[in-house]
Image 1 (cartoon, rainbow, N blue to C red):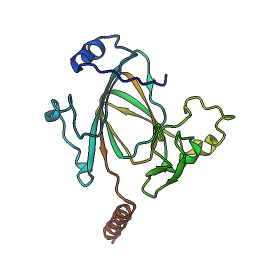
Image 2: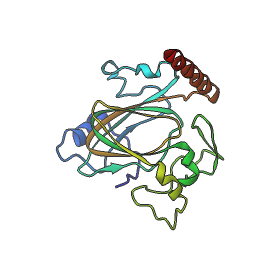
Image 3: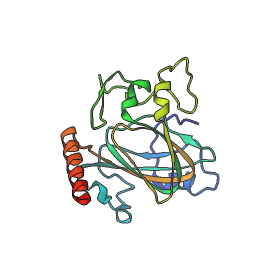
Image 4: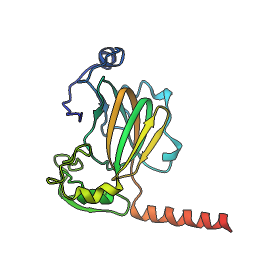
Amino acid sequence: RVSITRYAPMPFHEFLKRVMLTREGDRDLYLNLQNDNVLEPPLLQLVGDFNIPVYFKDLALRCINLWMGNSPDSISTPLHHDFNDNLYVVVEGRKHFTLFPPEQAPNLYTQGKLLGVDPNGYIRYENMDHKPHMTQLDPARVDPAKFPLYAEALPTRRECFVEKDEMLFLPTGWFHQVTSIGRHVAVSFFAQPPSTQQLDFLKTALAERQAQRRG
C-alpha cells in the first residue's frame, strides 16, 4: 500500500515502545526524520554509532535522515525524486526500490509544472509549492489511458532490493518508489549535487586517469 502521511509529534521512546519493540508493529505509525538541519535528535544521541561516508567527503552535506517502521504490511512511498544526491543505507530489514532516470521526468507526470532537466540531473519546476517532485502515478498500477506517456518511461524502469548493511546511491533527480518490508531502519545522507561544471571536470579527470592506466 502507498503511505499517506499526516505528521504528529511523539516522543522517540514512545515510538520505539509502540512500534519497534512489538512483534506485530503498527501499520499506521512511521518515523521520518527529515528537515533542513544536518543533525536532529535522536540522531544526535546516536552520533557515535555512525560516520559520514567517505564517499561524500567532497560534497556539501545537507542533512542526515532517519527512517524507521515496523508493519505487518509492506509500505510504499509515492514515486518521487530528491533535489540532493542521496546515499541510502539500510541498517535493518530490507527495501525494494523502483527507479527511473531524471530524463524521464516529462513522462512521469510530476505534480509541478516541469521547466527542464539539467545535465547534472537537477529537475527544475515553475514553482516549488505543493511538492512538485511527487508524481501523480503509482508504478505498481498505472492506468495507460490516464498516463499514456508512461509507456516511454517503462523501458528505463529499474528495480532492486537493498538489504541490511547495503547502500544505494541515488543521484539528484532519480525517481524512486521505496517499499519497506517488515521491521526496518534506514539512514540516508543528503548532499548538495555537483554543478554541471563540476560534473564535467570530474568526467574529464576520470577519463584522463583511465587513459593513463591503459597507457
